[in-house]
Structure formats: structure tokens, C-alpha cells
Length: 123
Image 1: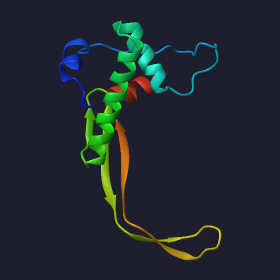
Image 2: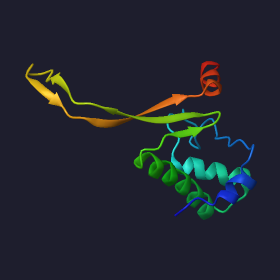
Image 3: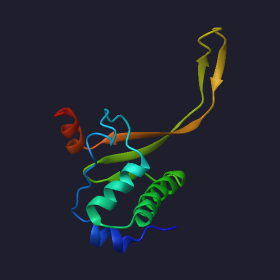
């Protein structure tokens, strides 16, 4: 499924999605889920629950597919997901002390934008 770019450009441009600061049970929020994101889209944009869930899933699927293709993702005002390739290197088993080779692999990192860093530091 591809993301409907017209929908994102016309409806979501310059809009901020606000999530509730506390969950429905009144406890401390520690994790935002896909359902929380979909509920925020329902509340703020008036889409149906099904449309909102599909919208959130399509966005996440598009991001995941781009990362799987080796592309970097840059979300202005939020941050960027970058990939790099780590080459094989010698390592050591911490329990036994035996040497082992750590295989080459691709790793994903997230670098928050300056705006996001500032928002988090103000909390």
C-alpha cells in the first residue's frame, strides 16, 4: 500500500498531532502505541477509526520500506533515521572470555532534530 500523498499534503500540512499526556486509566504514560497515534488522528482530524489506523500503518510501512531499501529518512522538525554498515570486527564473549568475530551488519540510528532536543530538554 502506498501512502496517499495528496492526503498528507492537504490535510496534515502544518498540523500538529497532540497525544494525551496520560492514558485513559490515569496512570503514567510510558509508551505511545500505533493505536494511540490512530486515536489522535481520529480526535484531531475527524477521520474514522479504520481510516486513521490505515493512515498510521501506511506511514509506518512507507518508513520501514524505505529503510529496508537502504534509504535514510529525514522528518523535518523531528529527526532523521540513518543507516550505516559496520564491518566485521573481533569481539569477546563476556562470560567465557573466548574471542569471536562479530559479523558485518547494517545498523539504524536516530538523530533527533534541534527542535525535538529542545522540547525534550524543557520537560
